[in-house]
Image 1: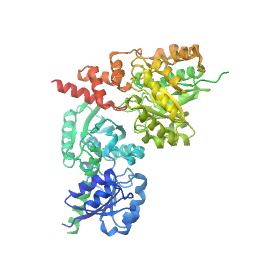
Image 2: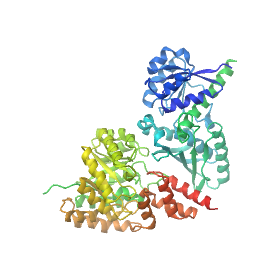
Image 3: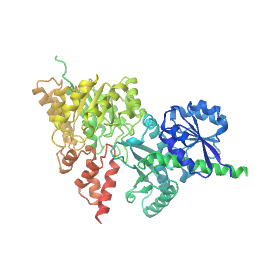
Image 4: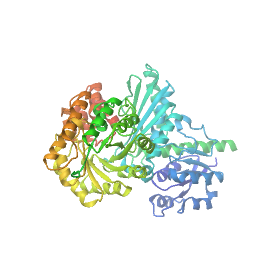
Amino acid sequence: MKKLKVGIIGSGNIGTDLMYKIERSDALEMSVMVGIDPESEGLKRAADRGYVVITNGIEGLMEHIELVDIVFDATSAYAHKNHSDLLTAAGKKVIDLTPAAIGPFTVPPVNLTEHFEKDNLNMVTCGGQATIPMVKAISRVVPVEYAEIVATVASKSAGPGTRANIDEFTRTTAKAIEQVGGAKKGKAIIILNPAEPPIIMRDTVHALVEEEGKEEEIIASIEKMVEEVQTYVPGYRLRGVPQFDGRKVSVFLEVEGAGDFFPPYSGNLDIMTAAAARVANELAKQLAAAKA
Amino acid sequence: MKSRSFELLDVTLRDGSHAMKHAFTVEQIRQTARGLDQAGIGYFEVSHGDGLGGSSLQYGLSKVQELQLIEAAADVCENSKVSVLLIPGIGIKEDLQDAVKAGAKMVRVATHVTEADVAAQHIALGRELGLKTVGFLMMAHMAPVEKVVEQAKLFESYGAEVVYVTDSAGYMLPQDVTEKIAALKQSIGCEIGFHGHNNLSMAMANTVAAVEAGATYIDGSLRALGAGSGNTQTEVMVAVLERLGFNTGVDLYKIMDVANEIVAKFMQRPQEITGSSLIMGYSGVYSSFLLHTQAAAQKFGVDERDILVELGRLKAVGGQEDLIYDVAQQIALARV
C-alpha cells in the first residue's frame, strides 16, 4: 500500500508530539515539518530524524507542496483560516488541531469516518477529545438534555497557543459536545493547575439525562467507550465509578499520555495528537482502497 | 469633604453566592444593592460565585440568571457601580459584553496566581469597553513574592488598572500580606487591592496590613457572607478603618443597617469558623469548596477534614470542585 505523505505545520508541543504518532501509523509517512523559528526544539528533532524542515511557515510549504498529501495544522485558530484556504486550493486534505473549527468536528470513537469527503476536518480540542466519547456513551443510551465538561491540565502542558485561545477552547468544545456528543446543550470549563510535580490530565463529565433508571446501561456503555478510546490512548482511564444523583450523571477520568514529546502527565497533548493521527491513518487507508 | 483613603468594594452579592448556593433572588439583590448605594459604597460585585458563566453542574446552577441580577442591581443605584467577576476558562468575552449591556461598570478578571497570561484578551476587552479593569490573582498564598510580582506585571502590561492579591483560601497571615502588597507597591505602577477570607479569623488583620502597606482597593462582605467562613466583614471594616483614621466614604450606620436588616435576614446559616473552614485556612484550600466538601463527605460517608487535607496535599486550585468528589470516592474506596 502506498502511504500518504504527511506535513505538519507548527513545531510546538502538539506538532512535535504528533510527529512521533505519525511514525507509528501504518498508512502514513512523515515527510515535512513546518515552523517559523529555526531554533525550535520541534524543528531540530524533525531534522535529526531526517525529515524535510521548512522554517518560513506556510509560504515555504506552498513552495514544496508536492512533498505532502495531507497536512496537519498545529498552529493557532487565528492562523488556521489562511493555511486551510491555501492548502485545500492545492488539493490537500487538512486536519485541524486548532480550535478554529472551520471543518466539521471529528472524534474517532464517535464519528471517525463521517466527514471523510470534506477537505478540512477539525479535531475539536484536547478537552473535547477526552470527554465527548463519554457524552456520546451516555446519549446513545438516554437523551441528554445538558452536558458539561471540566478539563484540568498541568500548566506546563498548556503552551502559548492554548493560553491565547482559551475562549476558543471553551466555545469550540461546547459546540462539539452538542454536535458530536449528542447533548442538546453543552458547556466546557478548562482549568490550569501549576502543581509540581505536574498533574495528569483530569476530566469530568456532568450530564443531565432526560430519564432516570438507566444506570446499568449507561455504565456498560461508558465502559465500552473507554475501551474504544484505549485502542489509541492506552492511558485513558475512569477514576472510580460513574456517579448518579437524580438525573445527573458524573464521570471522572484521567488521561495519561504516551510520553512521546512531553512527559506522560500531559495526556491532553497525547489524546489530541493520537486522535488526529488515528483519523489521518484511517483516511489514508480509505483513499488507498478507493484507488485500488 | 475629605477624599476617600481607598475604595471599599463589597462582594456580598458575588462571593456570597457560594454561601447562598447560587440562589440569590432579584428582590434580595435589589434591596442589598440599594442599601450599598445609599451607604456610599463605590463599587460592589454581582455575579455567580465563580464569575460570569459560572452557573454549572460543577459549581451549582444559578437560581436566577446572573444577567438579570446584574441588571436589577444596576437599576437601583444612583452612585454605586456594579462590578462583575470573570474567570477565563469558565466565562468568555461574550459574557462580559452581555454584563456591560446589563449595567456593569467594572470587571475583575481572575486567574490562579501563576496563570495571568490566560487573561490578556479579557483585560484588553475590559479596557476597550471602557470598564474599570482589574486583574485578580487568586490563591496568592501559593506563590512566592517574586512570582506574584511577575504575574502582576503581566496583568499591568495587558492594561489592568488595579491588581489584587487574593487570599482565596484564607491562609495568609498579616506578615504575608504586608510582604506581598509592599513588593507590588514597589514594582508596579497600577493600584493594588486585597481580597481576604476569614477561615483563620485573620481577614480583618490582613485587611489592615494591606491598607498600611499601600493597598487602595479592599474587599469585604456584609455579615461576612462569602465562601468558606466569608470575607472581611464590610460593616466592621468601616468601623475599624475609621478608628484608624482613614476616610472610607461609607456611612457606618447605613452599612450596618444593610448588613443586619437585609442580608442577615436571607442568610442560610451564620458565617462561623467551622472545623472545615478552619482546615481550609490551615491547609490552603479554595474557600468555595466548603459546601461541596460537606455534600461529598455525606455522600461517601467520609470525614470532611480528610477530604480537605488531601485536596491541600494535591495542590488543588480554584475551580476544581470535581476533584472533591473524586477524592471523597477514593478515600471511601481505600477504606473497604
